[in-house]
Image (cartoon, rainbow, N blue to C red; front, side, top):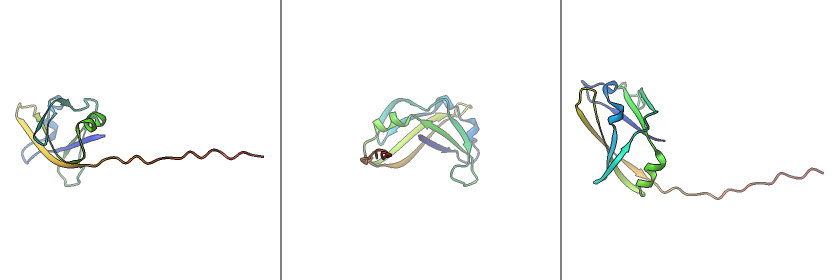
Length: 112
């Protein structure tokens, strides 16, 4: 899952975010075009347990992985409130290279 947790400053309500307006627009300083959230998932809760409501939205993780090389990456999203006001938010993540572990399948023992 490519979940993003959005918290708004005092005076703004995450319930007033237009879900279809949320896009990933930058990775570091590189522009990203038409990378929108999964429109079938959103959740308002308190993910970070700071008593401030968060809006959790989801990007297509596989598509996101294809854009991210290992290392520290600053991702920037933008969106609009239902009032038309624009918001931007950024955070830095560390992308690590997945290590593929070999796996073994143990054949069932034969019964005598």
